[in-house]
Length: 497
Ligand code: UN1
Image (cartoon, rainbow, N blue to C red; front, side):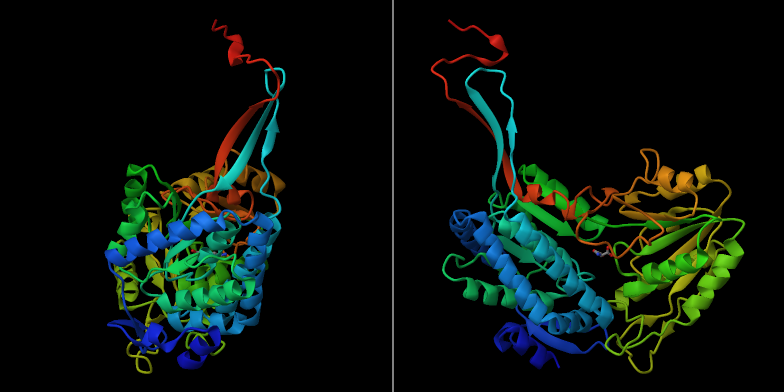
């Protein structure tokens, strides 16, 4: 299967059959290919190429740059099933979600094409006669993109599509756990470049298959003005100071610990469906996965019972075969989940689910039953993000208590409330409500559309990607003052003669 997928995507066999680093599928632990990991010298050479490509690409008019992204979007439409299946094979998310991820790529391409004609600046009133002031936006440089295994292609595309129309070149370091999807995306982009013609310079987009050292080399390079990274809070804590030390900018999309406040007035049918998708979808390996359910004490028992019933109907197995839950990424993720569940039991929490499944059929595939952990209080275990399907359940008495519990975690990515009380829903998204980058009403915390800004506060890193005015992050702002008079008045009325 892998051969035919890679062939249709346009990746040559050499790229994934000749190396000493094995790429493993989490579905059954089988080997998908072997790649060569590049060292720091190769990164150095790639940055130099990216710099040259940037110097040419920034001269191409922005709407023409948009045309390249349009062609890329067409390639993605044509190969949605192939790339979606590759995401499933390499990362284990179910095929429907693999397709969904490619759809996010297509959507951001559409947005970026429109944006390419709207890289608007401002005109500003000058205090001096015969003067014009304006603000304009210019391309930034080679952009470094670091992505994670769980969403191996969409976050790259959110950054890449906008960065390209903004006139930048790209250096992409994908997760070592998901290099093949990166090669697939690169091959499709290269096809779009070939169709686009000579204006797209060689080296406009490059993939760096490397380990942590390669990532650090990229982060340290002063020719790369912006690093946009998705991953764990631990990774961000190491990366951000390196980039800051050379005054580079970073966009960080790190861990989440996403909560739902479930009020007594909520439509429980809707809430249970939302809980199921957001806690169990992608086997709990989305940064937006629902991890904390803060439910009103009066409905707690009913809700827990209904959620358990919904969990019992979830099919676990081969992610290509119409199941709802695929495997965890690897043995380490499984062990981490088990260790957290053991600690919860030791602390007296009640644990439902969490067992390994299908071990006979897939000795090297780590399938689990999603877990529900009822806790009395929000302790350190709950405050930590465990990248696995564990849903903590806590109850609250009044709205203020729910809000306090909700915000009392170090992360601040996504959040939601289910309620029919407009006072509660408005308070939740008010200045004193959720402290997260994303706050939803009667919708779960995951599955965001690309039109909004995506990212969060506190340990989530503060970065934003995707829609809204995020394109500005990939450009440099310039303030221009033009004197069209025959005098030279100074600002602030200063006399200097
Ligand atoms: C991620 O898990 O890193 O909102 C990204 C969502 C998706 C993106 C998740 N659109 O769940």
